[in-house]
Length: 101
Figure 1 (cartoon, rainbow, N blue to C red):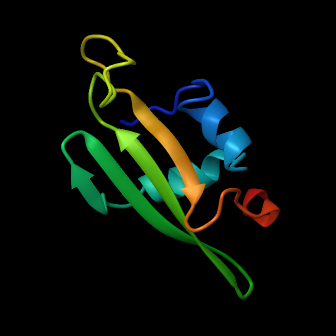
Figure 2: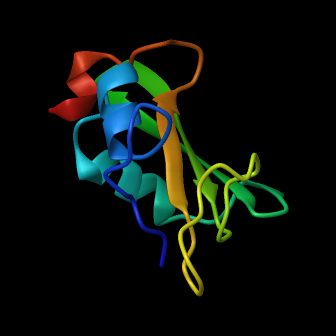
């Protein structure tokens, strides 16, 4: 199980829903439903493509599947993992609004 915590400006829901314009759980859930595309220690990356007619965007979800973040600033507690750090549309700062429809 990979949690998506409310978070703050650095990580979690509050981070990616504001900065990257991903406001629907289904966007993150769809990526997490697949296999891990890239793994580096506790850092997992999931890639999925979202489509709206002829428009395509690649969604990237970064997960810290470890008790602490790589920089050691956040600790989820014994037996827990940090979870979703961020989600974004590859190649752009903010995802298009249609991703949330």
